[in-house]
Image (cartoon, rainbow, N blue to C red; front, top):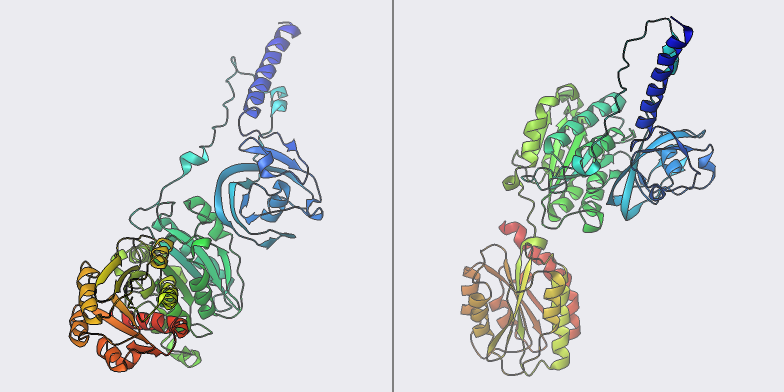
Amino acid sequence: MSFLSVLLPLTGLLLLLLLSSMSSVDSSESSVPHPIPCVTRGADLMEDGVVVLCPPDCTQGGVSVFGTGIYASVSSVCGAAVHRGVLGPSGGPVRVHKLQGRHNYMSSYAHGIQSQPLTQWSNSFSLAKPVSVPLELTSVTSTTALPAAAQPVKKPQKKPSVKKALTGGNKDCQIDIAMVIDSSNNIGQRRFNLQKNFVVKLAAMLRVGPTGPHVGLIQASDSPRTEFLLTNYTQPKELTFAIKEVSYLGGNTNTGKAIMQAAETFFIQENGGRRGHPRVMMVLLDGWPSDDLEQAAMLARESGINVFLVSVAKPAPEELAMVRDKDFMKKAVCKDNGFFSYLIPGWFSTTKHVKPLSQRLCSLDGLLCSKTCYNSVNIGFLIDGSSSVGEGNFQLVLDFLVGIARSFDISDIGARIGAVQFTYEQRLEFGLFDHHDKEEAVNALKRIHYMSGGTSTGEAISYTANKLFRRTGPGRNFLIVVTDGQSYDDVRLPALEAQKQGITIYSVGVAWAPLDDLRAMSSQPKDGHTLFTRDFTGLTGFVPVIVKGICRDFTESN
């Protein structure tokens, strides 16, 4: 056999291997790095899965980075790679995966780069270290006998697109959940990692998704630290990755501060809170808190947040002397009925508690704190349009009522308002179910035209009770009567009948309104439901008094 007859098949095999390798390199996720400068943004890259080669010292150039883990496409790719820890200061290759846009990119400091927050952006990207597959062409020169026919080199399978991987989530558990985790000296680094593993499993069991539950996370330490908001990660894999990336802080167990911050900021629409979705806060606590929980928990309840306290390794009898408030669990939860308190003996036995706890969080019928005065009441305004009021003062009355209306979450699934104007006659200006958002209802209130005429307040109360509140249930109906003078008819009996229907009456008198009539109309206790001012300009000072009173009455009735 000649040397040429051996060389030709060998050359053909080498060519086949080379072509196969080139074919795989030309796929959508090329492993051949493409050099880019430090300022190249995610938006500048056209392909998904492309591998780029970053130069060294990108941390020195003042690159712009927006987000943490998931970055807005306006960010520097190389700067984000260093921030993420995928690259060091010396640069190198990194793979860029394009993602959908999102709300609330979080800021953080990592690896010498401070990323910035961003409310919203149209596209995002994530980063990963590229897996290089070298061309093992040198192996064919070994002394091992060659096969008769070369097998084609398989192309690497293409990863499923982001769109195909998206999940809608658990539609039977459409709630917004703020998870407050313990990052104090009490828990320590080892148990902190066990806590994160538990939260990862719980999040997986909840099945987050755009149309399922949304989860955000805040750490309790000396000062609370928000790690990510409700809409930052709405896909399971992204959320899992974000939880695993949370770093231990240490410090005191200031759980009250963390609850307060979450109650104030987490569920507002600007931070991703969804209108009409139940609000849940799950607080994980190792041992006991360093601060007071009562005031923070009260704010959470008043804000319609269902606080669950998961106590792991509760204080032993010999440790109770060190506990600031031994009733902290009772005071922290939405309601002290056993449903909102959950005990786990230790961090090494949490797995079996994942399913029962997730079922409890998703038990919508049990979330008793979801309804509050701000999103559940029906408020009727009974407005004196008699001649003694006058056009200018009538506008001051409307301004007063607008102030009350703006204090409530008016919507088709929230609080509602309606209005009746009266003289000797009554006019239904608009009903409780006529307007489905706050601005629409407030504008309707502002557009009411002054009638002018006599004053029959008693008959107007009966009309309002039958016309305005006929489709509503008891315990959440409130009537604000505003009048400036003596009624020509009896007000006591119509007011009593309305109160028997479950309507709480606040009487607001101005100028010549008799105090006896005002007290006869108002609900018990009379002093808390009767208000009077000599001048119409004094009405605005009653707005917080009435709002607070309505919330007090609602809480006591429900």
